[in-house]
Image 1 (tube, rainbow, N blue to C red):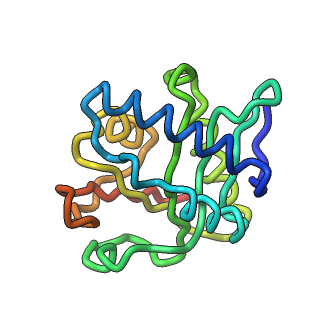
Image 2: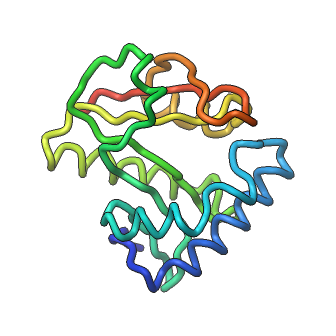
Length: 165
């Protein structure tokens, strides 16, 4: 098992990974993602920006995460505790690997990367109906900071922050 930066050769496998995970999320009544997002262009942009990381197990990509300094303008309405941060986007784990610690390993990797680069916190958002992700982030010590609207056709997203020590 290892985590490494993604490259464009990974893109097709990532598209399949997200597609499969989205189907599983929808079957569990989680409507955070759909067939329009995350899409090829978003993932390619993350890869080209060198901010997308993949979790590899037995030569297969079973997880991924974007770690960068980009925030949506809606984040500006949240009272964040720290302004030296990374933002987590698009955390995904192959659906048949849910619950075995892959997501936690990716989040710990993000924390380690933040420490290495002198960041003081990690920020993220997740859709209100994604009870699995909301519980997951709270269990990792993330604090609820408020809710935002990101997309016209969606309801609200919960924002979280974790101070890195």
